[in-house]
Image 1 (spheres, rainbow, N blue to C red):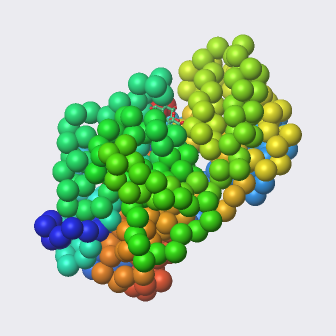
Image 2: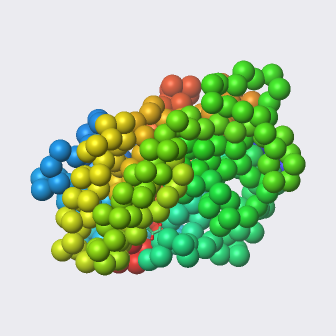
Length: 360
Ligand SMILES: O=P(O)(O)OC[C@H]1O[C@H](O[C@H]2O[C@H](CO)[C@@H](O)[C@H](O)[C@H]2O)[C@H](O)[C@@H](O)[C@@H]1O
């Protein structure tokens, strides 16, 4: 990997699929076989409806989804060696074989990256910051900020978060990065004179006065999202521990601090509000229900948009890397897996094992 080159990278993400621990996978394929094959199905384990509207919160799949999107930690490992406890199930072991540790495979990954232009895409919560009880206090460490600042000197680097863009920028505070908030529905990216801008894309300047492209494909949903946010704040106000967060183009309803016996009530509140909005859908995150517009846009599409804006799309020598830990990150993994697969006839995923506290 040429650290002096000004561009590109492998994709690291955290699907936390069938496992009970946080994982980070990379869609890089090691040179050697057996090649881990990217399997989107493996990563998508929570039942979802196409419309996103839940028909019946009493259905067991609903609470199952809430529980499985917040897996409990049962295994122990360190950063260099996989140490799997006795209760780790077969599916998890199989997964680990298919998607080996990125840290143990680091040489393979750097070999793969040699001569390539890397673009780095990072999720925020659970990836750059630890998962904490209060979403307002999910600060990244000084070391993490320094590491991100350093890598951004060598490679174009973007954060793609479920948070509002302003909020995630407030947490990260680095000016050399690009930021996409609201699960990619609010992108501030680089301007490339030769590219055609899609509708909803405007040229603007950032806080430093630098020319930027602002792309908000769900802008028409702003009033609806505000309305839904207010309704959800109101309907959940009696539920102890529930917290509703306005992420501009989507709304998060947190149940991390709600007693599990009241999760159904949270679900019912969300259901009762969004049943009146057929153009909104629901997705699951870590102990959070996310209400978002039904548009064909996600973190994978945001990654594609940013690559294009950087002038790095459709180049064989470009290696995008995505690091993430949540279900919404799977859209980005999927894009990178498919891209890598179709362009190189193969694809690869690695994971990072990160010690996670119980119930995180
Ligand atoms: O795409 P991300 O940057 O990972 O954002 C996804 C959601 O992250 C935040 O919630 C999660 O982290 C909180 C702080 O650690 C934690 O309290 C919560 O339980 C997690 O779900 C954020 O608050 C959400 O708005 C984001 O959508």
